[in-house]
Image (tube, rainbow, N blue to C red; front, side, top):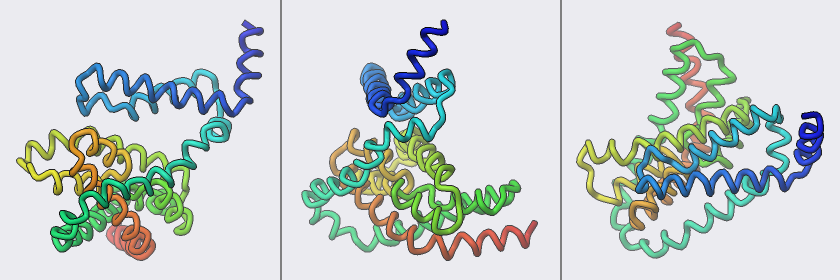
Length: 245
């Protein structure tokens, strides 16, 4: 047993170990997703996160150690986001035709995402630093982390909330939109992009290319709007909640 522990301690110092385990976890999640007929509940990101969380817990590995090895995946978030320009360009005409209603939905969705999280959490007694951390949760990770840090929040907590928000949106969006009888893939995709950033956008692409393109638009625009209004709106909402409490 001591030999196994020593071997693991040696391997855990290699950054490639955690990068490899992250990729393997996602491959397992994606295989399960396909085997389940692409059902939203069997989300590959959720499965990968669960597997990695169990692994970190069992091996008693610090998150900082894990991130040191898996940070390359964090780095490629930027290029992956930029790559969404390809389907956006392919659907440029359809996007222009719906620019006005999209902007209205963007403002409503972005403000609601910030306000609902801050007001509900504040009403439940969450402290100011945590409220500032969860306010930008619906923006894509690189933007959300930067906004959180600039406002005085905890970027690590923000990262967790961003992931949970994306996974939740990817799971509930399809059945919820079906229940609401929203059939237009432009509206479905845009809603996913605004509410659930990259993970929601990935789910939208799995369903329909047009939905994916509009999800990409929603994700990009919401990132910009969140960066602009969260530093102004969040402190005001926190003050409002404090006054009511």
